[in-house]
Length: 92
Length: 122
Image (cartoon, rainbow over all chains, first blue to last red; front, top):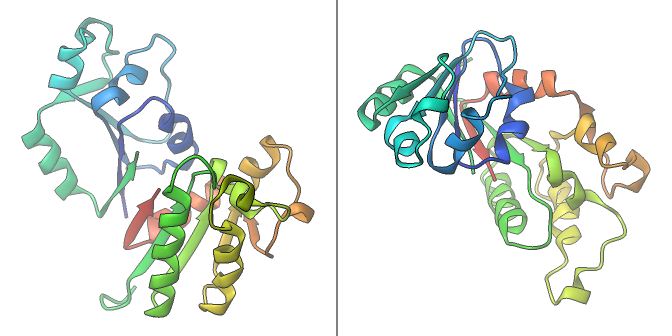
């Protein structure tokens, strides 16, 4: 059973972080993209996939500062990723 | 897990004051209790402040949140958990809490999330 976590602001990443399971995915969107583009952005060892919404990153001028393990996606990919997981946990 | 029995896991992560998040979520939880849903309630992060025994929200002209917390038992909601890390990093102890709940670790919370059919987080 895998979860998709969505993070749309800076504060919730540290709350979500301890609760991640192997196989989970995280999507950063809106102001949440600020935390995944920081130089000291880390995630737990769990086998995770990390995504950020391309337009939210680009609109904030952060494309260059995004770590290479964070994959940018578009909204249609977001829908597909939602369907690949059993449930979505929204942090907002 | 049978297809028909859904487990709803609710994470309450907001402090009782400042906005209506905690109160709104507690009304939802009590409603789920009325409909006898299979429910896990987890107090996490600032959500643990909702459980403090010595609150007087009347001073802020707000409904007393502790009232809804104490109603949980009445509504048959007995699977109530508290994140021990959230409690301890805020310098709180179990003795200060208004209801008996099970202390669990973040690892155990993520296991509950994995087993849930629906997760509600506010």
